[in-house]
Length: 250
Image (tube, rainbow, N blue to C red; front, side, top):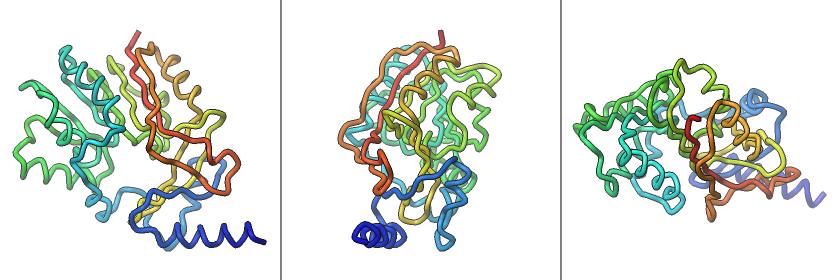
């Protein structure tokens, strides 16, 4: 009875959430999680409310991915595909500490409403020649670097499935703050305040194995310590964490 009371209280907290990063429930698949979003909430990022979730700050957990991205740009890998990059959050944040070359071409892939806001912002800031947008992940074909920061968990397709649809695979993959679990994959719901999103916490070893099967070789991997993630009242829900890696096409 006590447990049921605690779960009910947490569900109310989840539904009333405005500014926390909360998780709830366990589902058999990404699609099932999506269908499990409460009918009183907006679903996913493709709505006008989510375009205001923007901060140009560089967080401590950004630095492993920033390190490899900076090294990539210094090595001449200047065609960046930012998968799930919102309105260009990392483009704007990182340019304060990375010397972007004149030939840098940074493409953000996101949902239509976010892309529209990103294009308008890029026009206002006069960076449209360097920063552009798409809603089609297949535009990553032939780029130098596919960069995904905190976005894979929101996508219905895994990264290896996405790579399999590209005519020419990117030379390098950099993942950061990707939700992972040490033992299994969990599908859950994530409240971002203005909306609720289906969310995949992927088995860590399977994630890396998928990149290897896709023809890539690991350069580095890391754990993003200090960024919390927990799915209460779910078996193993206290074990997820955020992680990242850098893989090069073999």
